[in-house]
Image (tube, rainbow, N blue to C red):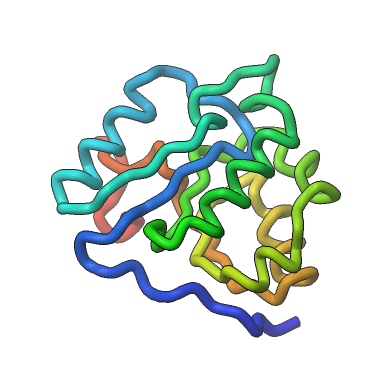
Length: 149
């Protein structure tokens, strides 16, 4: 299957949107450190409610996580979307996503691990090209290689 929809490249001094499709943050520093990393490079960061949500082992209810994805897609100021982490739970979102909305507002989305099922669904049901790569929480971490970032 080939992607037919592509988000625009992340421009210098652009805006990255962040939502949590799977697991919640472990420590506030897992959110604050990458914000500093991006802002030190002149990017704006837009966090959604799911970033701070916690419901057992996931970042809030599935519908809330989907609402956050939809909001980032339609926000014209957001240039690219990052998933906070992998973890467990992204699969709960799949039947709730408006794939027509995704197709109408293609944006680069990056995440890893459990987010793989989200990548596959977005490709198959909207044609969107997404990226398997480090989650937002990885940026600014001392153990990340420059190549990865």
